Each structure stands twice: as structure tokens, then as C-alpha cells.
Image (cartoon, rainbow, N blue to C red; front, side, top):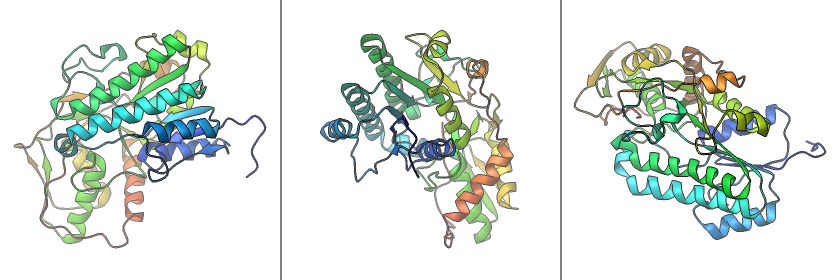
Length: 336
């Protein structure tokens, strides 16, 4: 495909992940052709020297920083050192070396877990650092908070245009379906699918089922990311604060984990019992983002949960040559 004149050279860090792959799809759908990607094997983002050489030679104009180490409660509890170290190193290297190379525009993708565990609902952007974090994912949350402050600090000192968006729980094509280390929707899709194909009489879910969560289809998140990146600087600046510059991205609606499990079961076509193991952690009781700021800027999510789950299950089935039947395994963990 021929590149358009003055087409920006856009680097999507984490292009093979859930969000990064969706951003690439969105950019291409909008006609962007000069998109730069590197696999983990080609570019180790925790290695500053590799990142420095990449930016020195690639003449990047814009960066979407979607690369991150992510996972659900089980993964966060099992690998806290990896979650804080890897994410902080990736963020520091990409932001700093982008600045060194003269990249003026960057979008950092965070997570709604940055907010206090018991934040007032819905959660507004200014609630950041106003309370104690959820213990089960504190290392990851701290890294993401540092990423926001990294972008803000470079803006304040160097005049860059580094923006941050905080998505709610994401799901969709390109998700991680690991039985223990995945987030709630992909974990449930796999769990119910295996129960259906294996004829299991029940599916056991971590937690009480009472916590409420908000879920955003990943292609909506990608569309929001590109939208925020392309807002005129004066518009972005007028709707944010230099030291609270991030913008929430979500649907503005939430659902209990119990209701979600029933909906996933219906999507998959599972007819057995759903059992909740209340001895396992629930995580944050509720986490609904206030998305009024982004709505005022002209963007709203467009994919209903039922439709998004249908598409996500279709994407899951495409990854299965012959889905393994698993009769005894730790129940799927609910992402905080």
C-alpha cells in the first residue's frame, strides 16, 4: 500500500497484545499505512539500550504505548515483582527514549486499577491517589500510576504532548485465554467452553459473584485511544489538568460477576450449574468509571456487552484447533 504524503510514522508498542492489535486495526481502517511494530523478540522494551537504538534509527512521529505485563488476580498475586518491574522499565524506557529522539506525541495506556480500592462510584479522574489501592494488584497499579506521572512530568519540563487514557476492564479478539493468568472474560469464556465440550455438570468461579465490573470491547478502546491522540492540543489541555491529565475510557455501565458469568454461559451455550467459591478473593467491590469527560469530548462506546461477548467467543473459537477438555483445574480468577 502506497504511503500518503506527510503520513505520520506511528509506533505501536505491544502490537501483538489485546489493545495494541486493536489499535493497529483501527489505524489501518482509518487509512494509516506508516505503522511501525516490533515483536518482543525483535525489541526488548525493558532494555534501555535496545529502545534507545530503535528510536534513534526509526524516525518515529507518534507512539501508542500499549505494551504491558498484564493478568488477573492469580497472576498479580503470584508475580508481583515482575508486574511492577517489567511495567516500570517498559514505560520509563519508551517515554524517555521517545523524548530523546524528539517524538512529540505519545499516548500511554493505563488501567482503572490505578484508583483507590474503595473510591466513590463512579470513579472520576481526580480520585487518583486519594486512597489505598486494591492489595491484589497494587504492584501493577503503582507502575501504571508512575506511567501517568512520567508523561505529565515530561510535558511539564520539556513541553511534550504525552497523553494518558485509563481503560476499564477490556476484552475481545487477541485476548489471553490462559486458565490461571487471564482476565475475567477470557477466563470465563475458556472455562465455560471447556465445561460445555467436556460435559461438566458445573462451573466453579472464584469469589462470591457480588463484585461489580465494567467491561469495554477492545475495538472501542482502540477507537477511543486514536480519538484522544488526535484531539487538538488546546482541546485536550482545556479538559485536563497538567497534574491530572489522564482520561477515563469505559462504557459507564457495570454488571455483577454473577450476571456476567450467566451471560457468558448463555453466549457459549453451557447448560450446567454455576457455583461461586466465596473462599477465593473478590478483589475490589465495585469499579465503575465516570466517563463524562470523554463523552463531553465527543466519544462514547458503541458495542453492547452481549454483542461484544459474541464476537469475543467467535475470536476464541478461532484460536482453538481442538479445545482441550479440562475436568480438574483451578477455577477462573476474577480480575480486579
